[in-house]
Image (tube, rainbow, N blue to C red):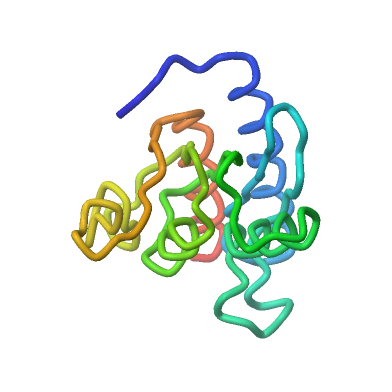
Length: 154
């Protein structure tokens, strides 16, 4: 499902895109995420799997951890997550367990995505919570950041 890109969505996704670019500059796969409560940014980060030697250090997981610590809760039911790339199955699981209200993402990921591609995690009967999902927010720029990164690696 795609929605009209309003001002807040655009500015939050802009922050996520900046985090993606920072990740790419560090040599990480350039994915960025921002977690918000209303108009308040609780956390923003990019992938850090190489830096931290941690395969779970995806942008989404990092911002969920930070926001949970900030709020003193394992649940984030009134929070929205902005991420530049469709979340993988691990991140979709974390989003579900955190009870995040809305997920906005940029580029789809036919190979590794698990929201609108692959396992379609939130559509499974075993999924305890599915956020409202809005795809295609700043999709072209998000995809271009990834394409440029991988082209530079070849």
